[in-house]
Figure 1: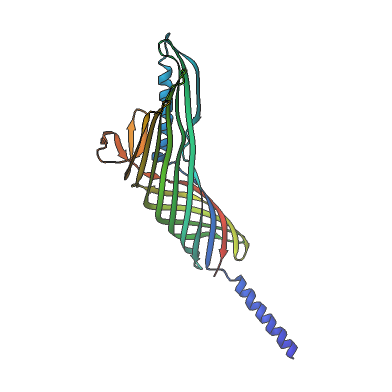
Figure 2: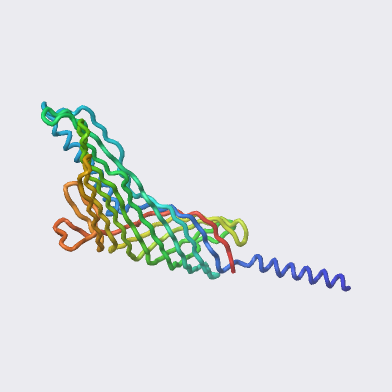
Length: 316
């Protein structure tokens, strides 16, 4: 009798644990990696401007040749790259009701840095001046962006089958973003006599700001176990910061082979703007006395499609 009672209690306990194990978890945690497509046009104008600058100067100096000034050799190399995608990671805590409606609190981080550069050289045989070489270089040139995005979301299960689940969601949050750019510009002239004149300019901009973000997506999940699944999620996100504030650093170093020259350093703070001239538009930071005739507002627009792959773990 005692043996039968013991077996019965064991079976009852096993059944209770099995029932608890099969009970659907209301709280779950998503951990994912993210691949985002983007085209921050105002930030990318840095690279487009440098492309126009190098191309313009190369063609300008080439057009100066004549019967008294011939090009003996020429070389142009490199290119300037734009920011088109970024990798990120994130997590999401979600509560789902028995009706398939869910609510979530999430956080995503992403960062991308794009280095590039280009340069050219032209060697001239000048009847009056003698042989000399011109070198123009922007290398390295780099733009970057970094964001933190906390979100609140609402979810709805379109399909709650086994083992596949299909879910859609909308989420909103406040994007905290920072961005910047750096470049080293070299203008150099070398004569056959050994005399060299050069001007090197170091330029760096940094800034940060915040803006509202909105996303919508569709997630397909494969259940591996009751409390563990794999998912893939795709969607579109609207992410834009209209006001970036930061600092600028500009250093000019002018030298010749005799050791003569000077160094000048300028720093200032203010709002990011776009300044347009012969070569195109380029980000800068506004300063007192700036000519505003060719100045427009700068915005950091990281909107675009995204793809996430991750795991879902049921916790409660």
